[in-house]
Amino acid sequence: MEMAEPIPPKHLVPGTRGTFKFPRWRAMVEEWNKPLPDGHGWRFDQSGNTAEKMFRNAFADGYEAVTGQKYYAAKPLTTKDEVREEGDNLREDFKKHGPPQVGKKKS
Image 1: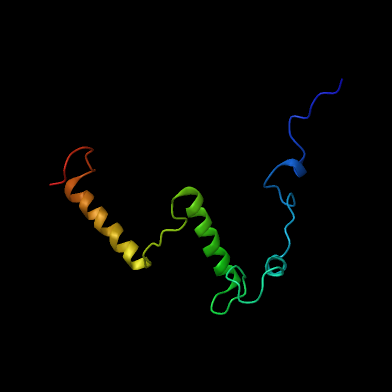
Image 2 (image 1 turned 90 degrees about the vertical axis):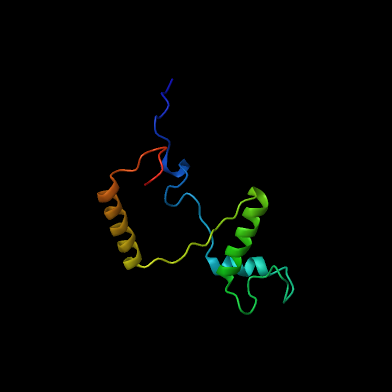
């Protein structure tokens, strides 16, 4: 009787390079658009939107429909200067008041 291999072969491990072969993005878009008439809302070639943007929006809508949660929550853009300033403020606050106390209000 032959012992089982403790490590599965690379081609059976998800995430291993080459495990899944997907067609190029443009080929998938063309294949998707084939059965849909021009101007159909599901086509990924409508004017004003790139196919990638439309796909991302469709994915986000589907995610929200299935999970009830937004896929993407917009965050305000932050500059390096704003991050640096916030860090300086936190360090200054720490120097004045010490480490935050759990359950106590800051004076």
